[in-house]
Length: 85
Image 1: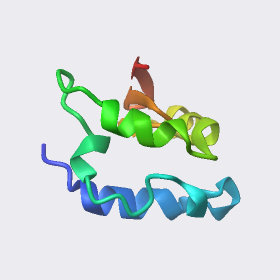
Image 2: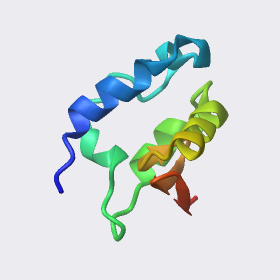
Image 3: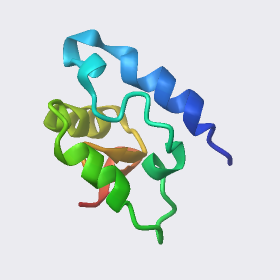
Image 4: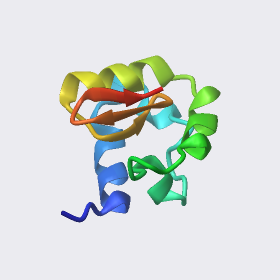
């Protein structure tokens, strides 16, 4: 299964303005592959972007609550299950 990460980021981030997605540090980031690493890939780039993000905690909560995969709030998730911190 191939994920179109550009479409996925553009679609998921603005789902709820109430969560402050417009303030997300990753919004508009051109390195889309960094947000959906393979299990053996380092995700330090995404973690570094998330480190200073004002909605980091809400982002991670969103991923866990809605079954997301990829890097959210500086953590990696697989269908809402925390894989790596």
